[in-house]
Image (cartoon, rainbow, N blue to C red):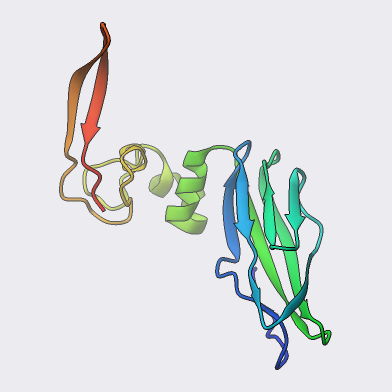
Length: 168
């Protein structure tokens, strides 16, 4: 559960919009924690392994090594001692495709009928694996998938290549 604690009048408050951040193990991660109202200090609760927080400019960064959900509470205070707290959830996935599934299917990312590579929840004839590969929206029916398999020559070597138009 993610919640916000309302700041007192005149208090510094955290303005970072996303309270859930999706990261991938062994991939560099940077997140800026922003605050407003004459910020004097920005602090945090325990961090996941392999991440560091620089309170000024408010940057959480590192290369996560452990999958799972991590709760971090950031607190912002001004020079009058007034402040607020905000709970953030850091979701660390083992692969980019797992993170993509969570971002597109939410808590249903573990339901095979919806999120498996071969599922087609928007029933457009394009399975999730292709939706992921071609940067499509698996929750919105795409009318066509414009792809072409071609032979590309680099120097004297020929390669099979796939050309496609990204639909957004």
